[in-house]
Length: 469
Image (cartoon, rainbow, N blue to C red; front, side, top):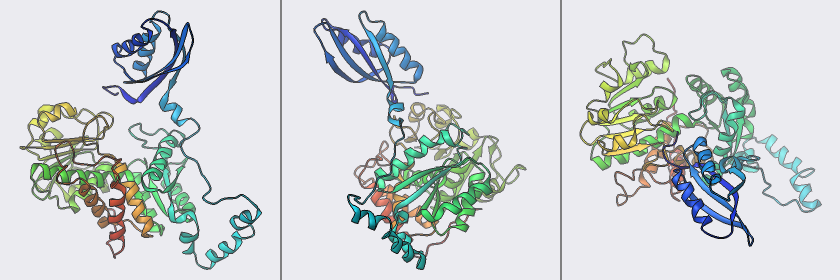
């Protein structure tokens, strides 16, 4: 639940008030006294006796929004006509559409775009399949594929419920990188069916973005698709998160004047995101890492280790610490949480090393209260938009795919991920860098272009393939 009013729970209340007196100021006061924030107030119709007004305001959640409406309705002379949830209005009818890039105004244009002229293009591609990248949407199209099993923080809610999220992802691809992406929501959570479905639709796309597929199934889906396909496969929940975390940590360590090779890092979360973040941190030079899941520290002596946990145990926690998260956090320089809300307190952060860095990325409720963490940590980052240093995957995936598509890459490599993280970190200049600015805004004009250029350059050489455990 949001702790402060958020545009995510923004409503517009259409109402009538008496034309005279202080009716308008009473509306603003009523919203504010209920704990809301007025963001717009528009008079849509005026008469001698009545004013029709649209009051737009932000609330904390749906119950709070209703409380604001009740407060407005309690004002003498106010008549409520309609209450609109602005988030639902934005999604009405979907958020994306397909449009033609070429005019179809007459018979000549129709004959070239479709039959009979299109047959010549089809035959050219039949002779050389690589021409599909040059002559079709394949060169600029990404499939955003989900099975609806791990949608945001909502869990296994199914493919239909996942569709608004995948639409949003497609809209972000277009807005930040000019890429045409399309949501593919699969009504199966069987690995074989997912892999086969993506395999047979792949000819129409230049890349595959796997999204919101639960662990450990997502690992096998990605591994098998990378083996089968000649286009890049990128699991954003893993590698997009990893790029953003490494970029943010690179700059955070600059703020506190520490090196990644020398710091102790404690991680909470051993799922898809945690696994990928760990791999990239190790590739970037991290040497002293302890990973914890809900059972405590991951170590070689545990008898419940699957393949990914076994890899973590083999590559971290050299001293074999077997305690809980709180013990692992003690004296750590860095905490990275990609796990669950409220698992640490401010006192736990106080037990860390001098000038600690805290990334509490569980969303919407972080692993530790950002306000409590900021009392003890030198740098704090979250996944939330209402605190500084929001670590958001939109900083990575549009630029990554722009670079992959431009380079006509067939694989995603570890070097590309490292290059993307380095480029993202470098968008923040030394003059701008500080405890409250370690990652750029998602609207920074250089983010996608810088990341794309780094990936494109990395893809130009013979990079080492990224191999899962």
